Structures are given as structure tokens and as C-alpha cells.
Amino acid sequence: MGPGQYPLMMPTNEWPPPVILGLQAGSPLLAGDGRRAAFSDAEFRRAFEFYVGLYRDSLAPVVANTEVSNLFQEFARGNIAMYMTGPWNIGEFGRRLPDELQDDWATAPLPGPDGPGVSMAGGSSLVMFSETEHPEAAWRLMAFLSRPEQQVRFYELTGDLPAVRSAWDVPVLADNRRTAAFRAQLERVAPLPKVPEWENIATKVFEHGERAVRGRAGIEATLRALDRDVDRLLEKRRWMMDRETGSGPEGGGR
Image (cartoon, rainbow, N blue to C red):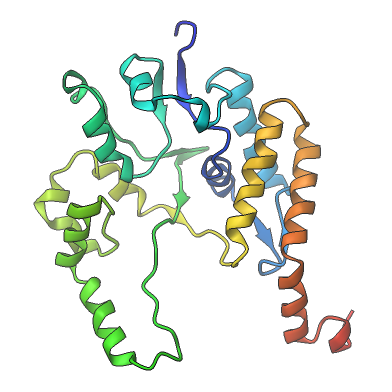
């Protein structure tokens, strides 16, 4: 590749890449039922070393997404070969790449350290509150939105992929070579930690990750600092859980 050309675009201010690599390495991200950070553990450290190495080996440019004026233009120029993103960008690539390049790009599932890799389970959930005054109506709405034909319609309107397997049998999806990779990836996903603090934790991941990528901190120091910051974010969660289980000072435990 020539000057200014890279195999991979991975903006330094996005948290999914290091998190996905951590999941692929077997990291739980958080330990103790979500009470504490686990970013200094061996699994995430191994993934983080690989992540930082992609930049140090010039396989990805050290830029934030705010420093890229036009991602699609860089693809069209041949300056970027790959980009880790989600199905919402299928439509954008179709609209924003030149017509003569529409047969020259494709999607693929994520590779892993020892074969096909996992990705994070994204998307949203349909939830009914336990104290709703209209449980029957809420349940009917959830059932309606879960029907295959409604999931397909959502895909047609928004590009959001169906969670119901049978919806993928519809030709608009079954015959689409670019959604096929995401269908395969949906069989290999890992959940993110189920804690309300996750969005703030994710921000800390890319903030500390960017410091390491830009050479402002070493890997060990970065992960220790990340653990400290995340543990502070989880302080209230620990207190509440310890109080419920009686393992904290108020419960007589240690």
C-alpha cells in the first residue's frame, strides 16, 4: 500500500473495536456480577495489546472519526480497505459510493483469534414494565412488532436487521449478499455487561484506549487507570448489591 493508505479504518474514539476484541479473547469485561472492572485481566490485556498494535504497525490510521472528512470518499480513493461497522452502513455505502464501485465492495463476518470471531450483541429490546397499567395491550404490541413481516418492514424502512430467524427467509434478505454476513454473525455474538453504567464505562474504554494508541500511556498503566475509573463508576452498584445480599458493612459482612 502507498503513503496514506491503510488496510483498516478504526477510529480511535470508538469503543466497540477494543470491546469486541476483548470479547473474542474471552474477557468478561466486568467481574463479580458487574461489581468491578476486569480490564487488567489477562484476556482483555491480550486483546488490548493486539488493538494498540494495529495502530503501531500502521495497519490503521491514528485518527478519530471527527478527523475523517469523508469516510466513503476515502474508500472510493482506495485509501481504506476495511471498516468495522454495523448493518446500518449498508445503505450508506450503497448511496455514497460511486456507481462504478458498487460491485467492488462486500461485507464479511468478523474473524477471531482462532477462526470465526464473535461480535457484541447490539440492537434494542422490547420491554414491558412490571407495573404497567395496560399489560395486555403492551403484550399485544410486543407480539405484533415481533412478527416476521413487521421485522422485515422495519428493515425496509430503517435498515435494522430482524431478530426473528424466520424473517430472514424473505427474499429481500435471503437474496441480499451484503446482509448475509450479518446473518452469519448473529449466530456468533456475546452479550455486553448488563449494568446501567455501561454507556459511561464504554466512554472510559475509548478515552483510555485513545491515550494508549496515541502513545500517551503504556498498556499496563492504561488498563490499571481504566480499571480504577470503571470501579469508581460501579461504586454505587457495589454498595446497593452488597446491601441487598448483606455482605456490606450495613449487613454485617466484610
